[in-house]
Amino acid sequence: MVKKSFFYGFLIVLGILLYLNPNFKTISAGVAILLFGMIMLEEGFRVFTKGPLENILKNATNKLYKSITAGAVTTAFIQSSSLVSVITISFISAGLISLQGGLGLIFGANIGTTATAWLVAGFGLKIKISVLAMPMLVFGIIFSFQKRMSLKGMGNVLAGLGFFFLGIHYMKEGFDVFKEYIDLSQYAVSGFLGVVIYTGVGIIITTILQSSSATLALILTALAAGQIEYENALALAIGANIGTTITAVLGALGSNSAGKRLATAHFIFNIITGMVAMFLIFPLARLVNILSEVFQIATDNYTLKLALFHTIFNVLGVILMLPFIKKLERFLLRFFKEKIYKDIDEPKYLNQAVLEFPASAISALFKESKYLFKKSVFEIVAHSLNIHREDIKSGEKLKHVIEKSKTDFETDIEGLYYKKVKTIYGEIIRYASIAQSTLRLNSKQIKAITDIKIANRKMVEIIKDSRELNKNISHVLHLENEHLQDEYDSYRKKITKVLRIIYLFRTENDTEKYALQLNQLKKEAKANARHSNKSIDKLIRKNLITAEMASSLFNDYTNVNDMIKKLIDVAELLYGRMDSLLDENGNQ
Image (cartoon, rainbow, N blue to C red):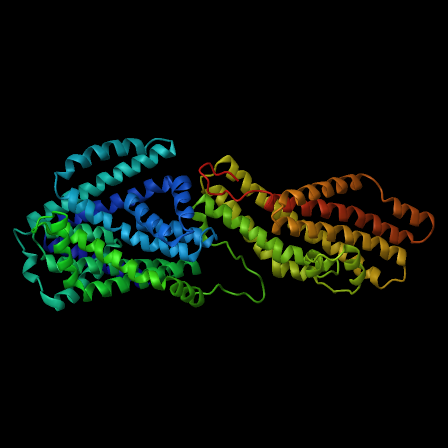
């Protein structure tokens, strides 16, 4: 509501300004064109995020220095810190990268945004930029109408650059005309008071434009036209850095905990960096003068000196934050905790952020499915057999496990299904369907999501099968027929053996060994399903069990073999693959 009111208020003020001062139109048009160019740039680069960019960002987060470098280089190249932030939030939400790695990317992205200042100051204001803008727009629009996504993406990038440079041209032209009527430099305020005032102005402008890069371009063109003093321009640049955090905070209000953590980290980083830059603005300005001599930047080239100042205080901010990054991570994890639902289990990895990219969506779906199997399905099946999970995971002989497990757990499988499985299963299927219908997936990625849906459907079927089996296992405990109990103990042993090997398959390094064992057990289950149980036939002939008991045994015999096949199918679908979700070809 506040954001919407602010937006409408801004539109009213802008309309009044344009009406009262027509000369302001050219500057406003320049800003609008530049912002549109940045949007097209982001859309263009988004096409190429499926492979190389995702790989770079994911693989660069195992070390902090690598993640900061990757964030800086990527942002400088694609000219979009917001796209890097979206990818980072999506990957953290899917569990593909750690929070610390994400923080490194965000801090690096802040350094990367300084490339805009260098691009505008060193290139955009030095030549007749519209000469370059027009060919870029022509070829960009032509490419953007092509069907191939790579050509369309390249077209958006070229058109985005064209609009970006054209925006700078109009802003420069606007300020040149504007100064004939109004000299904004007469409102210059020197000293620390000027720093405070113009920092505030920079925050307001960035909040309105929703882009620190656009604000910097505006400051640089105004500085080049002599409309603002150099000292005040430095303060405006600081304000632009602080102002961009408001955008991040507003954007994170409705996001998940991962988004809130990153937005808060961004806010803390930029506030600290901005405050340090404000208090050290004059020493930093002197440092810029010294470095300008070293880099042979002219004394009166204030635009390049501003770009250098902007880079210095952003790098300084990262250096200041590095010793505290672990403490910041602990604070964010403690302050923004995952919601805990007492009545019904909710998804752990699935949220809107993971649907931004195929890699994060598939990874989150796999992780959620594995978590569902490990924490819920495994427990429900074990308890349906009246066996503790820890006994299955232990190295104790299965014969001893079965012999000592003679207590009826009185497991409410129906209740456990509704509490632990139903909601998560529904969300997995929903997210899988959304991913298939909205994301650009290759054939291997489509197969991966299909496998996930099959695995989850089989898990639900396993629970339903275990519910029927549990009724008879618990009933037999209260009967005095040891022959019947022995048969059901053999069923329990078979399923327990499968559960144990699956546990070892997903936790031990020697997966091939356990994969072979599971494959053999599945073959045996298929063979058993085609033949009757000879031991049951023998019990019937000797009148050791009643016809009703025999009927239950035959039904459960088929049921047990089906459960074994489904359990192994789920294990193979979820754990029998390498996690290479982010390779260039989308291999699974």
